Image (cartoon, rainbow, N blue to C red; front, side):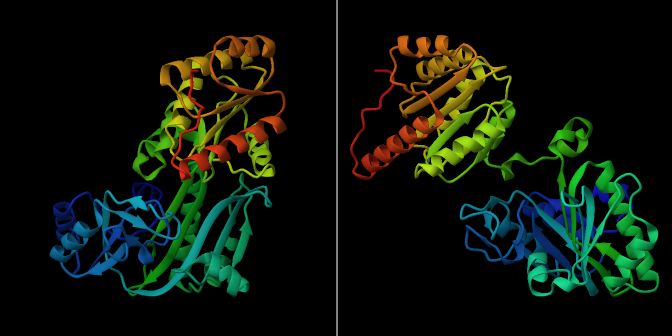
Length: 403
């Protein structure tokens, strides 16, 4: 809301509450007899979601501060499951208590970076307040797109035309065009990759307001958007990704059984492809980058070893900037200090690879090696299958490390 206020984008009066009492106090501060209580989780489809405590819906109208308090009590502290969260849901640590508005029209408006347009593109539709994907599928003629010159910005006549196509007329057309122009300024000045307003609405008294927003920011701009990134709620993220980020690693959790540790995004994709080609499934994307050190290797191995989903760990490193012997030392240290028992398959190539292989051979630990990616993927898939079958049969497998 602070960003919207800063850029003169009209929005409803609202307060964030982290407890039942704060929700009641927030409702008392707002004018008007009616409110809306919204669960604050990073996921779409909140209104149709369900909390793990059984409470249905993450968006509810109410008509008293006491009712706002009761609704907050049913949301805060539980996790909300929506079509975007998976069965585990997202934790709800706060709610937004907002004035309830009565609307004449609901429209959709977004700005996003578009590869096909080589820059920003405005997407708008008179069918707001619903899934834009459904609108695009069922009535694509109601989706309007406007590529924007990133240096010049959108032309005023183009914004007025978009506003008219969305159903705004008279003074509301000018209001809508102004909000669109201010949203573009917000998009550029805040290093956004997406600004989505759904709905951009006209109220019963003729105001045009942004009633709901989703904003994505370029991670590479964190150094110049410190105020924005300081608001990040890590409880909404995969804890493994948070740990990896703090270590300077790039991690994305997947739903497979083979943990991948690589250096370089392209090599990571090739490794995952090789695993799939051999009938397995990757449990993650974990890229250490070109400048990782032995400490990061140890931390990465711990991250994978702690994941109960991982049955085997495949390490695929090409030593260029990062020397293979440094990786080998980090791996040996990880195995020794963490007492890793999950099977490890290692494929190393590049700088000091022979020295690295000698270090692994002489360490006395059970680490399977491979000379090429295909062999490494085959071994990883086979080992993970053996571990999975052993777990299902409730028997142990002799992959203990060290020997």
